[in-house]
Image 1 (cartoon, rainbow, N blue to C red):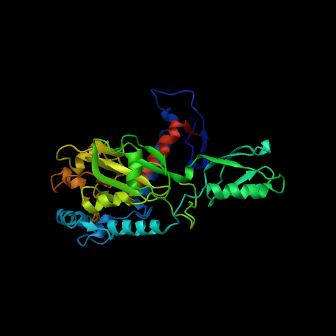
Image 2 (tube, rainbow, N blue to C red; image 1 turned 135 degrees about the vertical axis):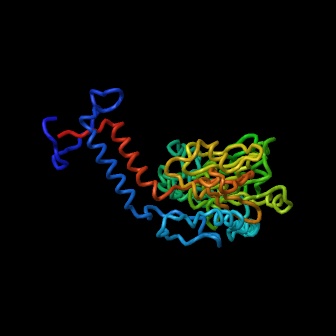
Image 3 (cartoon, one colour; image 1 turned 45 degrees about the vertical axis):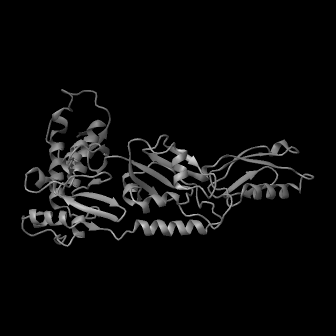
Length: 401
C-alpha cells in the first residue's frame, strides 16, 4: 500500500476474494482492520451495560441469593460456595398445582357442549350436488372459518356440525335449484388433531372421534406406551375453544419443545391420582408426550441441545458434557435444574465452574429433569461481535482504500 490510509478514507466492499493466502485473506488488506474491530469489541464488552437482554436469574428466587447489583469489588459473593450450597439445598417451588389445574381443565371440558365436534379452521370438506356439477369439489375451511363456493358465495362453516352445514347449504341452493340435495363428507379433520409423541408405539398426530375421547384413548390410538416409557406424561392443553366447541384457530400440533416441557403439566401414572387423569377428555390441539425412561433434557447455550439418556449417577456436569459442552457465552455460574413432579416445579442452581474446581458438589440428575444453560451478559457482546466478523470474512468482506 502506497500510504497509510486513515479510517475516514476506508470503504467497505463485499465480494468473494479471488486470492487467498493459506486459506486467509491477505494480511496487508485486512490486518489493521481486524485489529481495529477486535479492539472495538474489547472496549464494547468492557463498557457495555449488563442489560442487553433480560434474563431471569434463578439465584434471586432463593432466600440465600445476594442482590442482583454487581459488587463494587471483584469478590464473587453471589456465587460463593456457601451461597451456592444453600441455593442447592433450598429448592424453590413454583406456585403450581398440577392436580388442581387438571381438575379445573376437566370441569371446563365437561361443561362444553356435548355431541359431535363442530367443524373448524383447516378442515377439508368434500361437497357434491347431483343437480350442479359446478358445486362439486374439495374446500378447505379458512383461518377465518369460511369456505367460498360457487353460486352461494362465502359461507361460515366453522362452528357448525356436518349436518348443520349440509342443511345450511341446501337452504342457500334453493334460490338456484329445485329441491337441492347436498352430499357432505369431511376428508381431513385438522381442527380435531391431537399429538401423541414420545415413548409410544406409533408417535404422531391423531384425529379425535368425538368429545368423549380421553387422554387414554389417544395413547391407545398411538399403539399404547412403549417398553422404554417412564411413568411421566407431559401434557400441553390445546388452545381454548368457542362456546360451540370449535377451535378459535387451527391447532398447531407439534412435539414439545424444551420450553413446552417446562410449561407443560406432569401426569405421574405411578400415582393413583395421576392415573385417574388419563380419563381427562381430550380436545383439539392437545399434545401428550410420554417420557422415555431415564432421560434428561439439556437446553440453552450448549453445542447439542436435546434429550440424553441418564446413565448411573449422571450429574449436571456430565449432562452438559454429553450435550457437547457449554458454548463461550454460557453462564456456567448459574446452571438451572428444572425438576417437575405432581407436587409442582422445583429449581436448583449449580455453579459448574466451582464444581469443576472441586469447590462445590455436583447434583445427580433425575428422569425428566431439564438442565438449562443461560448466557452471560458479559460474554454475549464480544461473542456477537466475533460471530459478525466471522460471517463477514466468510462472505469475503475486505477493506480497500
